[in-house]
Length: 170
Image (cartoon, rainbow, N blue to C red; front, side, top):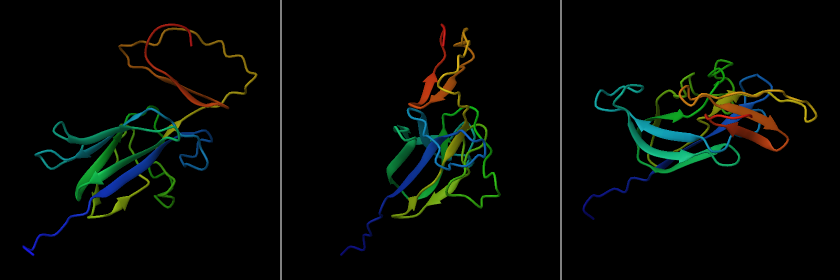
């Protein structure tokens, strides 16, 4: 034995949810699929949220809005979620940390540490969604400006549909 110690990797996971009832909590809310989630480490300046942050890994939310980063080395990280109309972070003073949103209006979580073999769970984000009755007629048409990067999330009994920037009727 040469004194080598195996460092076990950890995991980081969470969920991007559609907050239909407007309470900023994931209480049986539908998930938002297909959104980019980045695992960041601080760059040379040692601060998160600056231009030199390093993207350690990137993934997409799955059909339930969930994401997972496996094989994460011990260290300090933050998560950045590609979201729109993000709900209030830690809405109830973080009492409901397992179901609240953990990102700010820009989609960035606070920094957190991953220890060897640790599973860091519930780094979640919520977006404000509005439900319309199935028989409602929505007379919305127009252009979504690609330059503005606009996006519309619509929810129905089939889940959340995202209309990305482009032109046409939606």
